[in-house]
Amino acid sequence: MLIVSFSALSAKDSFEDFKKSQADSFKSYKDERDNAFNKYLEEQWKGYEAYKGTPLYKEPKPKEIPPAKPMEAKPVGPKITIQIKKIIEPEAVKEPITQPVKEAVKTPSKEISKVLPIVIAEPKIDKKIAEAIKQKDITIEFYGSTLGFNVSKELKKASFYPQNQQGISNFFSAAASSEHQDLVSDVIRTSKEMNLNDWGIYLLVVKLSNAIHKDQDDAKLLSWFLFNKLGFAVKVGFAEKHVVVMHYSKKIIYSTPSYNFGGKKYYVVDNYAKGSVGKLYSYEQDYPGSTKPLNLSLDSLPKFEQKLESKTLSFSQAGKEYKVPYNYNKNLIDFMATYPQADYDTFFNAPVDTATYKALVPALKKYIDGKQASDAMNFVLSFVQKSFVYEQDDQQFGREKVMFAQETLFFSKSDCEDRAILYSYLMKELFNVSIVGVKYDDHMATAIYVPLDGDKVNVEAKQFVVADPTYINANIGMSMPKYKAVKPQSFIFVKKD
Image 1 (spheres, rainbow, N blue to C red):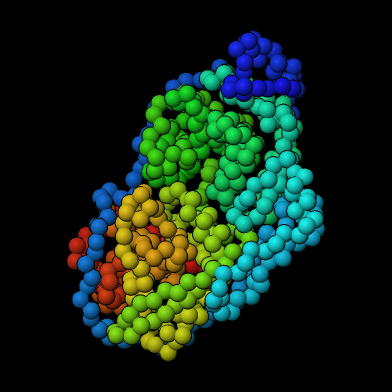
Image 2 (image 1 turned 90 degrees about the horizontal axis):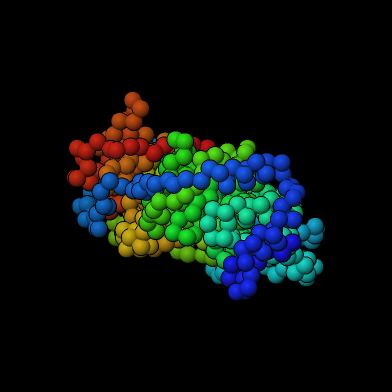
C-alpha cells in the first residue's frame, strides 16, 4: 500500500490517483467495528460550539499575604512519637517493556535510609537490551526509560489527506486496515508494567504518535485511533484546518476548552491553558465499545526509572533554624509537571515517592518526637509556612497550576493550595488525623479534626479547626482576618490509608 502525504504530492498527482492508491488497501479491516464506524464518520459530521474552560477560582488569589503576629500557643495533648511506615518499594522499570529480553537494567539500590548527598548517576543499559531496542521500528525516551515499538509500514503511511472530513475518514481506514494490533498490545503491556494511570497512558500514546508521524495532524489522528482501540471515549474534530482530539471526562478539567456531546463533556486536553479552539466539526457517536472516561486520579505512582536527587529545606522558628533534607525522583517531578488542572481530590490524595518519604519523615521526626501533640502539629505547620516563598501560579508558571505535595517540596515557590496539599499529606502521614482542604473564592486553607481551640468550620456535622499553611506565623486555630466570617465554597476530603 502506498499512501503519500499532501506535502509529498507532485503537481501531476491528482486526488483521483490518491483515492485509487488507497482503494485496494481498504478491502479488509482488522476489526469488525471499523467498517461501520468509518461509514458513520463520513455521514454524521456537523458543527459544535466550544465551552469556555471552567476556572479554578472565582476571584484572583492575593498577590501577597501579610504574616500574622507571632503568638506562643499553649501545648495541648499527649507527647508524640512518630511511627515510620515500613514500605516495600515497587520495582522500577528494569527493561524495555516491549522487548522479549530477560536481562535487567541495573538500578540504584531501593533501600534509602538516609539522604543522599549527591545525584545518583543514570543506570547503563545492558548491551543486549540496547541492541534489541535498536531493532525496533520506533524508540522513545519516556521518563528515564528507552522504549521500543514495532509499527507496521501501513500505519506509518496513514495520512490526513485531503485536509477535511474525508481526510479523517481516509486516515482511519488506513490505520484500521493496517497490522495495528501488536502496537496496541505493546502499549497496554507497557502501561501495566510501568503502572501508568490514564494520564501516563495519554502521555505515552501522544509521544509515540509524534515519533511515528512528524506531521502534527497525522500524529493527532494516530493518537485518536489508538485511544479508541484502548477503550477510551475520545473524539476527533476539525477546526481552522487542523485536527482536534477531545477526551471525555466525568470530572471537570479546569481551564480547558470542552464540547458537549449528548450531555457529556469532551475536553481538548492539548489546549489546556491555551484558550478556546472555537467552533469545530465532529460527530456524536463514540467508537463502538470505547466508553472509558479519562480519569486523572493518581492513587499510586508510576514505576519510572530512578533519577534520584537531593535537596534541603530550611526555616526558622523562635530564633532557631531547622533543616529538613530529602530525596526525590526527578523523572517523577517531570511527569507531574505535565498535569492539567484536575479536581482537587486528585492532588490532595496523591502519594509521594518512597525515596522522599524515607528521607522526609525521619528528618521531621527528630524535631517532633517528644513534643506535645499541638506543638508537634504546629511545628509541621510552621515548616510548610516558612520553607517556601509565596508566589502566584501566573507569576511562577505563566498559568494556573495546582501542585502535588511531591512538587511543592521540589519548587522553592508555591501558593495557597500547594501548601494546603502538602500540609494535608504530612498531617495524614505523621499524625493519622482527619483533615480537609478548605476552599474559598480566592484562597485555600486546611482544617483538622482535633480537640483544639480557635477558628472552626463545620464539615458534615463535625467541627474542624482551621490551620492555614499560607498564613505565616499563624498557629492552628488562626484564620486570616479576611476569612474569619466567610463561609467556605467547598471542602476537599483527604482519604486515610
